[in-house]
Image (cartoon, rainbow, N blue to C red):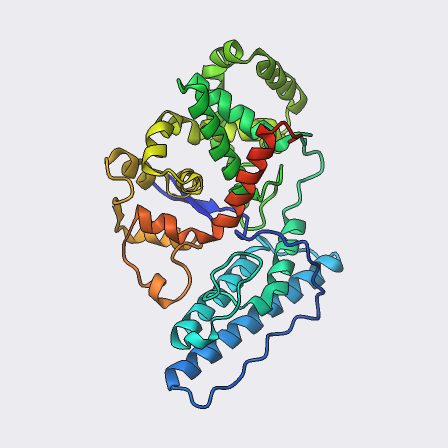
Length: 373
């Protein structure tokens, strides 16, 4: 779950559950918890951890069944229909981490989602497959949303030209494009015009709110002349998309949603890309940092200004709470008990984003190789 904050107050939750879709199908009604072999003897702590996990697993399965039945029978869904699903998924993983801390022998084989085995039993993969499918239904774009035939290339092209307008050379601007493609995958799994099952505020390809979109539009207007000089063809495409969007919510035109989302927050940090690359040479770490601009913008900007990005420590309980609401330090008692963390520790704890960013890197390479995007 992603919770955004501003300098003053929390904003609403992002929609996505931070899990990749799997190509395998699952069948509602056939979920089954993997068999648990009873050890010869357990301590009271181990027995309690096992019971708590089993209860959380049953609750997650029950909520999945309920939401699937509502969707299949076309019943009205509750407000924010993804919230209960998300919380149940977090609780299942959190209690499993508590269980494997108490019983390390329960750590099993790797899973297709790339979740560390100490946090998730691979035997429950069908549950997460169904979880993602339900979110795909609940977050489908509304009727009238305007798609692009090249959604990934659009993100890269827009970010690249904005970075050039901000003064970066071609090589560093390409890095800004790569980072921005990672944001698209982090926010919506790379799905354009996504709705939001956990927020009535954040929508579209970069999951912005109305005020953020308007702010992005204003900032774009301020650099449009520079963009036109750098890339006349892209500027003409922008004019066409503006005319196409008309009175539509700009967040439901993929091009304008990406453009305004980038201009709202990330573009102001594009001039820092050369320095960020030196501090964080791993492309996935770079993407994580820019995702933190989405989640905890004020502390992230402070860390960048500090001169010691990776060592900058967050100790504010409110910020730690927002990180946990984004599935960072959210699983297991040990992580939830943390009262502070450095940015290096935060980046390392963002492992649920890794598979998304790896997808973005692969897609970026395809775009640079000339494949349609």
